[in-house]
Image 1 (cartoon, rainbow, N blue to C red):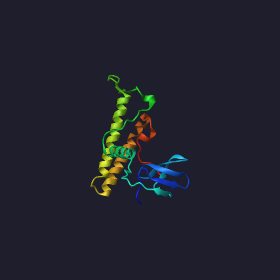
Image 2 (cartoon, rainbow, N blue to C red):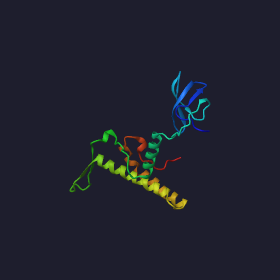
Image 3 (tube, helix red, strand yellow):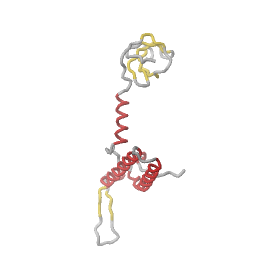
Image 4 (spheres, rainbow, N blue to C red):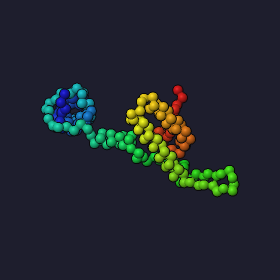
Length: 174
């Protein structure tokens, strides 16, 4: 099946007469005389009244951008902005030694949280490098189990994350 170019005219059983105004990898955007703009699947049923042959770029800018984001997130050690839970913003982490002769240490909690996120991101990069390495499957499984345990150890810090999906997850009991 050849893709219809922009400007092609069609007749759709539900929407009536229309003109193709955009093409993506999965849909035609068609402006119908009586129903306005609708997206229809490329493989849906319709009658072609006039086919315009045109080189059609079926990959939209949005699809390219989404794919690029996904690749960068997966393979880069550039971290996304992860928000700290509102209740901790501007707070301090205070470490007090048992020995009262020693001074306590006060750290801005935002700085501490940033370091936790950096550790998480670097573990993710290490995980990707292991998965794409030439190690045999058993070695990959063994190393993945260590990484899962590391994530499990870091779940203590989940209280700092604003968004639950960005928290650490260790192995889950079945």
